[in-house]
Amino acid sequence: MKYEVLRISSGKDATSGLLFEVSQNKRTFLAYTLEDEQRDVKVWGETRIPAGTYKLKLREEGGFHNKYLNKYGNTFHKGMIHVQDVPGFEYILWHTGNTDEHTAGCLILGNTQTNNRIAKDGFVGNSVDAYKFVYSRVAAAIEAGISVEVEYIDYDGDIQEIVDESSNNVMDKLSEISGEIQVLSAKLDNRKIDWHGY
Image 1 (cartoon, helix red, strand yellow):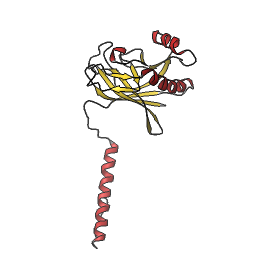
Image 2: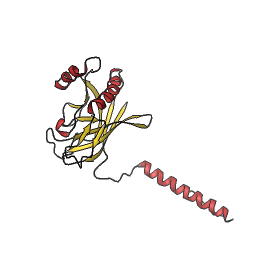
Image 3: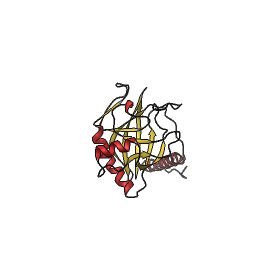
């Protein structure tokens, strides 16, 4: 099972995003997200984690776990959603909150979001309901023994040109289609063109 955190707006103090569940090549929107800001040099409690793909597990110890166990009970809460093996970070969790003041690199979930260009600390609202909705899906999959991962994607910021094999295949296909169109056009004009696929 796969999730994506699409970071859509990096502000001075916070990063706004969207959380999707990815299944059968389809994205389903689950919640708005809020994280700390992007920094080239990590400042503890003030820096979002690097973009990348990480495994998710349930962390069954620590302060957040005990707090949520008391708040939600053991029939619902089985452990904190814990992002594994993040370079330079420890104990990255998904939890409730409203602004970047409620996170130290973790992901906050919400059902509403305020533009982080307007609210400097960012803001997500209705966080408890969003958390419960997302948590039940992720925790059930982990408890069922399904491998669960999340990809954090920096959609905002610098746009980089991507050239890969697939783009070369697209150009080849476009060239082929262009040649076929020329042949068809010539036939309509009762002309003959020798076309060799290039």
